[in-house]
Amino acid sequence: MTGTRYVEGSPGVWSNSVMAKSNKLPVRNEYGEAKAKLDAFGIESMEEAFARGDSYQDICDTVGVSIIAMVRWIAADPERSSRMREARRISAFVWDEKATERIESAEDGFSLQKAAQLAHHYRWRSKCAAPKDYGDRVQQEVTGKDGGPIQSETKVTAHQVVAELLKGLELQRQAKKSGVK
Image (cartoon, rainbow, N blue to C red; front, side, top):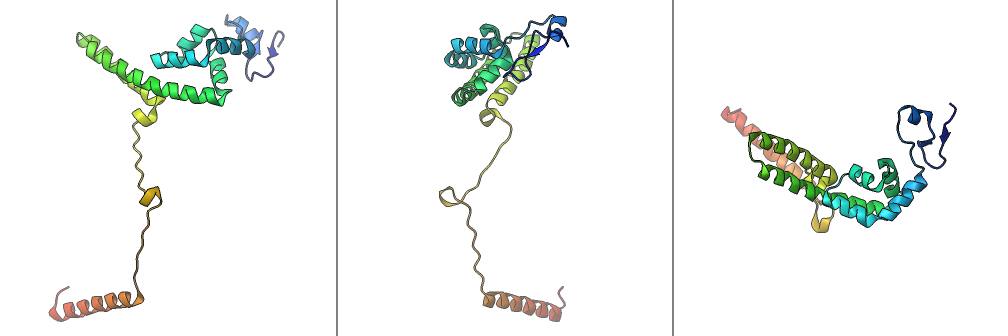
């Protein structure tokens, strides 16, 4: 294909692509330009945006980059990844509050139905962002002393086993004599 070239170091990103031109899509920036924009925006601003309940798309529109560029930028640094996970967990509380506000502000039957649908979606977003806090799955862990494994101990001697067997046989013999099954 004439007019296409692969941008090295950016898997799956094509620059000057015939397909992009034919679909009237903007030619995607090389990762370096997007990285510079994201660095200028900063992780702190991104955390605040997530805490407000902004979506990935909202943030990308503000910064002027693609979602994949933002995801790559976050994943490139373990500290950024950790901070964004925490920001998403915090955003779950925002989505839960939005759900409650929508239902409480409904004024008629139609707006209540709409609010209920939005609340369901907002709570779903909360569940995705913070499954431990809003997820459906319940996990129960049972541990022994000081969080260790559960210890089970059974002490039976051979003498006790024989005595129990003899007692059982005696009960069976008495039951036969008396005609009880």
